[in-house]
Image (cartoon, rainbow, N blue to C red; front, side, top):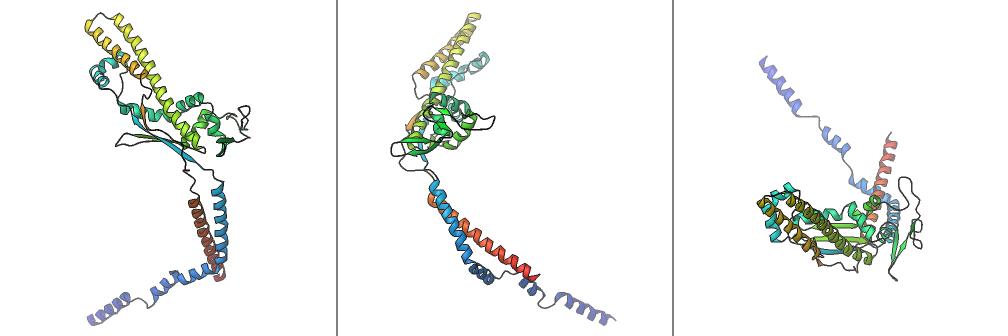
Length: 331
């Protein structure tokens, strides 16, 4: 009995360990992709592939040629360092100034960060457009730049050059003349400003169809930003001086009056330095120049990518059509 059981156990074990021959290879053959068949299908559909690829290549060429040249002008800026006297005064009377509601001169890096954010704000763009009325049409309605006579051609359906009026048709709440919000969305795309964390140098750049406009705007942006922040600091210092003088008149403590007088001196120094510094926040190291070469579009790259996209799409169409027909024939 034991011998019989052992034989049965051995037999069962052999049956489990030895599966039916060719069971898995047949399954693998069914799941395996025949590369020769794949290449044969692609070769058979070479006419369609060539046709679709050619169409995409032609469309890519047309699209690339239709894109206007975009020129990039940039300036390299250096943050103006804060004076040692202002820093020492801020550390000495910082607590008293904060209690009195007076703002002492900030460090250069703080002003640099403020300037970078300010120049990208809607508030600054509104002032920039107000100071330079030609900016808005050149930003929102330009069609192309004529290199021969260095003039801008505008969209006649948006802006009438002769009268300077906006005539575009838009739905409410938009107006014929673009708002600051609408212009800011476009301005964000052509403005780039970046700071090197190691050297603290700032690169400000503008992209435009006209290289002359791009260079001029970079110069204007730096000047207007310096002027705006300088005027803001002067106005704030003048308000602080008026407040400190009223506090001096209301106190009889000699030590307090002495401290307040020193705070007035610091605010007066701020006004003097601001008035004497045209480059208040940023000093121009390398000014903007009119670029000679376009920055974009990369027409060759557009054509290559368009052709590759057409070729891949054509191959995919051929393969899908083949396997769909194959499945229908098998059914």
